[in-house]
Image (spheres, rainbow, N blue to C red):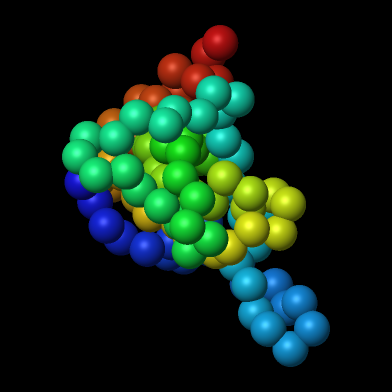
Length: 101
Protein backbone atom coordinates (compact mmCIF):
# COMPACT_ATOMS: atom_id res chain seq x y z
CA UNK A 1 0.00 0.00 0.00
CA UNK A 2 1.32 3.44 -0.93
CA UNK A 3 1.60 5.85 1.97
CA UNK A 4 2.33 8.99 -0.01
CA UNK A 5 0.62 12.03 1.39
CA UNK A 6 -1.42 14.34 -0.76
CA UNK A 7 0.97 15.89 -3.25
CA UNK A 8 1.05 18.56 -5.91
CA UNK A 9 -1.06 16.41 -8.24
CA UNK A 10 -4.22 17.30 -6.36
CA UNK A 11 -3.16 19.42 -3.39
CA UNK A 12 -4.46 22.91 -2.82
CA UNK A 13 -4.26 25.04 0.28
CA UNK A 14 -6.98 27.37 1.45
CA UNK A 15 -6.95 29.63 4.46
CA UNK A 16 -9.64 29.36 7.13
CA UNK A 17 -9.03 32.24 9.52
CA UNK A 18 -5.39 31.95 10.55
CA UNK A 19 -5.19 28.23 9.72
CA UNK A 20 -4.38 26.67 6.39
CA UNK A 21 -6.35 23.62 5.38
CA UNK A 22 -6.18 21.32 2.39
CA UNK A 23 -8.77 21.95 -0.28
CA UNK A 24 -10.18 18.92 -2.05
CA UNK A 25 -11.86 21.00 -4.74
CA UNK A 26 -9.76 19.34 -7.43
CA UNK A 27 -10.35 15.79 -6.21
CA UNK A 28 -13.17 14.18 -8.15
CA UNK A 29 -14.34 10.93 -6.60
CA UNK A 30 -16.60 8.05 -7.39
CA UNK A 31 -20.06 7.85 -5.88
CA UNK A 32 -19.34 4.57 -4.12
CA UNK A 33 -16.95 4.68 -1.20
CA UNK A 34 -15.49 1.46 0.18
CA UNK A 35 -14.89 0.69 3.82
CA UNK A 36 -12.80 -2.39 2.97
CA UNK A 37 -9.33 -2.68 4.41
CA UNK A 38 -6.43 -5.01 3.63
CA UNK A 39 -5.30 -5.13 7.23
CA UNK A 40 -6.04 -2.72 10.06
CA UNK A 41 -8.79 -0.17 9.47
CA UNK A 42 -7.61 3.22 8.24
CA UNK A 43 -8.72 6.18 10.34
CA UNK A 44 -8.42 9.88 9.65
CA UNK A 45 -7.20 12.58 12.05
CA UNK A 46 -10.82 12.86 13.34
CA UNK A 47 -10.47 9.19 14.42
CA UNK A 48 -13.26 8.18 12.02
CA UNK A 49 -13.01 5.31 9.55
CA UNK A 50 -11.56 6.64 6.29
CA UNK A 51 -13.32 5.25 3.22
CA UNK A 52 -11.40 4.17 0.14
CA UNK A 53 -12.48 6.17 -2.88
CA UNK A 54 -11.46 6.35 -6.53
CA UNK A 55 -9.96 9.39 -8.23
CA UNK A 56 -11.52 10.53 -11.49
CA UNK A 57 -8.96 13.25 -12.23
CA UNK A 58 -6.89 13.43 -15.41
CA UNK A 59 -3.66 13.04 -13.41
CA UNK A 60 -4.80 9.98 -11.43
CA UNK A 61 -7.68 8.24 -13.25
CA UNK A 62 -8.83 5.18 -11.35
CA UNK A 63 -6.25 5.56 -8.58
CA UNK A 64 -7.70 4.73 -5.18
CA UNK A 65 -7.11 6.69 -1.98
CA UNK A 66 -8.29 7.11 1.60
CA UNK A 67 -9.54 10.44 2.94
CA UNK A 68 -11.61 11.87 5.77
CA UNK A 69 -15.24 10.85 5.33
CA UNK A 70 -16.27 14.43 6.19
CA UNK A 71 -13.76 16.32 4.01
CA UNK A 72 -16.53 18.07 2.06
CA UNK A 73 -18.18 19.20 5.29
CA UNK A 74 -15.09 20.64 6.97
CA UNK A 75 -13.51 17.40 8.22
CA UNK A 76 -9.79 16.99 8.68
CA UNK A 77 -7.15 17.07 5.93
CA UNK A 78 -6.33 13.33 6.05
CA UNK A 79 -5.42 11.91 2.63
CA UNK A 80 -3.45 8.77 1.79
CA UNK A 81 -2.98 7.04 -1.54
CA UNK A 82 -3.95 3.35 -1.54
CA UNK A 83 -2.61 2.59 -5.04
CA UNK A 84 0.88 3.24 -6.31
CA UNK A 85 1.21 5.91 -8.99
CA UNK A 86 0.61 4.41 -12.44
CA UNK A 87 3.04 4.76 -15.32
CA UNK A 88 2.25 7.51 -17.84
CA UNK A 89 1.09 4.98 -20.47
CA UNK A 90 -1.48 3.39 -18.13
CA UNK A 91 -2.73 6.82 -17.07
CA UNK A 92 -3.17 7.87 -20.71
CA UNK A 93 -5.01 4.63 -21.60
CA UNK A 94 -7.42 5.07 -18.68
CA UNK A 95 -8.03 8.69 -19.70
CA UNK A 96 -8.79 7.61 -23.28
CA UNK A 97 -11.09 4.83 -22.11
CA UNK A 98 -13.00 7.22 -19.84
CA UNK A 99 -13.33 9.80 -22.62
CA UNK A 100 -14.62 7.23 -25.11
CA UNK A 101 -17.68 6.45 -22.98
